[in-house]
Length: 425
Ligand code: AMP
Ligand code: GLY
Image: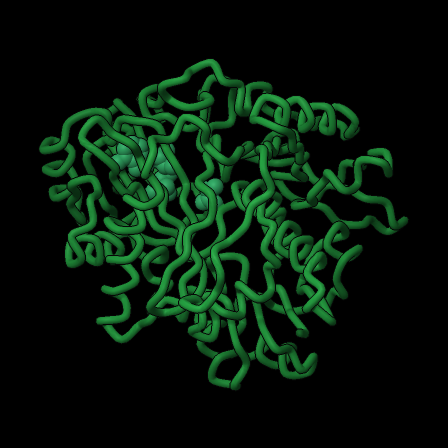
C-alpha cells in the first residue's frame, strides 16, 4: 500500500511511525512533514489546505490511501477533492468535518441525535451574549463558532472578559460549565461502523497544576486506570454511534477519526467538543500502544470495511508523552533555537515544530517543538521514562510541565485537564 500523510506535527509523526511499522505499507510519503517524519517517509512540498494541490500530489504518487492529519484541510474540502479523484482517504469530507469546524453545527448534531452535552446558546450580538451569560452564570464558557486552532475557548469567572471574548469572535456558543475530569476518546469510523481506540487524557493548560492559558496540549497519557468500568461502551452507545448515524442520515457520512472530548460530570458523561481528526498529543500515546497494524485499519475506515476488522489488539502497560515547548509559547513562541539530543533516544522523540536551518541543524519552528515518549508497565513507569527522555533534550528557552500524569488526584485522574481547577481563563 502506498500512503501519503498530510500534516506537519507530532500527531503526524506518530501516525507515520505507526504506518512505518506496518508490513503492508510499501511506500510512505508525507507532506509537508518535518525533519523527524523525513527519517521515516519521503517528504513533498504541498499546500495542505489546497484541495487541488493535495490531489495533484496524491495522483502523482499514485497513492492508494491519503491520511489527512489536521482539521484545516478537512474543513477546506481536501478529502472531498481527493475522493472525487478516485483515491481512498482517511478523513471526513467538509460536510462531515463541520462537526469540528462549527461549534454551533456540532451542537445542532448533538441536539438532533440526543447526545449529552452542556446546555448552550448561540449568540451573534452583544445582547444575545449577555443574556446567555446571565442564564448560565459563572464560570462562563464562551466558544468561537469557527476554527481557532485551540484558542477559541475562554473559560472564566470574569464577566467582562467573557463579554469581550464574545464581542471579539462575532458568532459564539455560550454554554453551561461542565465540572469533572476530561477524557479524550477516539473512534475510527467508516460512515456507518465505529471502532474505539484507548481512552486518553491530555493536559491543556500551560502551567503545572492546570494553571495558566489553554494550549494545544502539554502532555498526555493512556490508558486511564481510573476510568469507570464500561466507560468506552457507554460513550460509543450514547455519543459516537449516534453522531455517526446522524451525519449519515444527513447525507454526510463520516469516514475518518471522530474525537469525542468528554467531561465526566456528577450527572454523567457530557460532550465538551467533537474534533474531526486525531488529537494531539493524545495520538502520540494511543498509537504507541496500538499493536494492530495501522494501515489496514485506516484503509478499512476509508473504504467502509470496519465491520469486518478483527478486534484491535494493544500492547500491555501505559504510555506518557511530555511536550517540549518553545520560549514564549503559547503567546509568542520563539523560533530558530537549536535542538540537540542523543541518537539513542531518537525512537522516543516525536517531532512537531521543528525544521532544518541553512546549515542543516535541527531548530525549533513552532510553539510545541517535540514530544518525549515513554512507556512502561503502568502510568507511573511510563511517566518516569518520558521524563528521562525529555531531560536529555537541549534547547535554549525550552520548557515543559513537570506534572504530566503525576497521579496526585485519584478521583480526577492524574491531574489532567479538570474543569474544577479552571475557573479563570
Ligand atoms: P474545546 O475547544 O471546546 O475543547 O474547549 C477547550 C477546553 O476548554 C476544553 O478542553 C475544556 O478544558 C474547556 N471547556 C470547553 N467547554 C467547557 C465547558 N462547557 N465547561 C468547562 N470547561 C470547558
Ligand atoms: N489535544 C487536544 C486536541 O487535539 O484538540
